[in-house]
Length: 172
Image 1 (tube, rainbow, N blue to C red):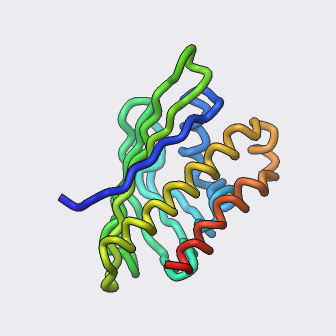
Image 2: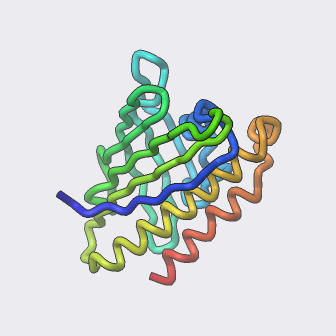
């Protein structure tokens, strides 16, 4: 089985609020630096995204790819690559766990990336770690900014934090 990279962060919000931000693909360009466009192509019988097309610009890696999403209960979503120009695999998941009285959430992000161009495993793991850390930081800032900021789309701080991963990817 392919190696993967995983990291966790604690967010000061209930799991349902965190998952609400994760599931709102239309707003990804507002808080993730790498996702320039997101389009839900298909939904499951509960109205959740089943396939999403993402236009990605992460410095050295620019790609237009489609991911298939699987929702497990209210606190887990995983995805796998359907098609891509640059990637051979892009498999990952978010797992949420309520902490304390449920007002805080531990978010664990797991990711496996395989590119079509040759790349050393060590460099690939470092790239995965940068992507995960920036995504978790962006998610935390987005969720903790509160619903008013989400609706207004004015959370530039999260976008700025997530954009750093593109700069980090260029250094690889």
